Image (cartoon, rainbow, N blue to C red; front, side):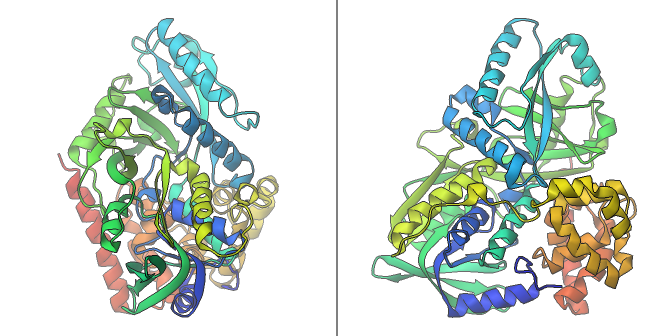
Length: 550
């Protein structure tokens, strides 16, 4: 069952740890967020020998806490950041069409207008430019202007006295943590050695040149000297701290911006489309999330607190509710909340910048000493370009000819045959013993990887049951999280392999015992290990709940 080269599980981790200790790599990546994942994939598909170390779980930081959008950044046009917008739009089109059509989905947004002529002219020109900048490849529809009446039909929730018209445009949506993990599984398919719970301690040098990294396996406590011709650090918000720890003087610094999102039921906001609302500081998205939930955010405030576990607070929640209620006929309240989460944006900072909302989202690649490259900034949407740029820079440390990047034409695991499988949903439903709607949901999360479920279910048919009462997630998905997707704890399953943590209304506490039962045999846990994982997750929930109390 675990013979697939792309599977991330205890056996794979054991093999990767042995490789770290005993082999030399062309490239060692520090950081398992989307940028590090993209670097591992870019390098592996060029034929380089690659390893990646991540101190927590894959996508544990920023890459699981975004707005879940693949977009050009409409608001960056106001900052005249046309290069970034154009680049992001090109990447959006690529992901929707061939790169990850099973994971990245088109999504329509309504931009409400508050005046009949002046605002329509100004905003319409901006959205027209947004459409033009994507170039000739156009998988998503062009924008269109909506009358007052059409806006009320599309979004009856909007106050007709305040919203006098609108413009509909398209972007795309993704489950960021799942997408990041699937990039990593694709990298593993092409030979990358990937590990979580492995911490980079110090750089190994030969004179000025970095020739490797001392790494600690946080599970066993073992320390290893990992040899590599070049090391790329993609540490996001930890960049400043690690540069200092490694004794590296970079040519940039990173500032942190906190972004908070809330989740409410679809019934709380009566609309057939997503919405983007202009605020005094930034923009607020009202995003369709699953068939019965809205995701609303985000904030954009300077942050200097705990990087490992950023928390939303009462002021963040109240701000989001206040802003969205400015255009709603029926206000939402705290009683509507199903979940909340906070994430940190790593922004490349320039001296004298007064606000995180004005710092560019473009990325920077730095090569301060031979054998060591770092990258920071950027947007989730442009991860592939960032990865290519970082690997290109590292090639000067690798003394041989290396092919050009091929990730533009490399599909993410599960993409192959996705559209044909959607057309075969009825047959697949019969084979798996689920409904057609369930099959489509699974295909939109796993793509062609759903075929792996058949053997799992044949050995344990009970895994076809939901993880918890009322949940859309099936037991087999929790099993797969540990057997194929690198989950090593209950928190990994509830926070990142699924999104039960912020979707369920009870932070997933009703699913904890069932998930523990399912993954314990795969992870070879003792009863004490299970109790510790449950306690760890309950502590996370307690902190989150207390943080948002008014």
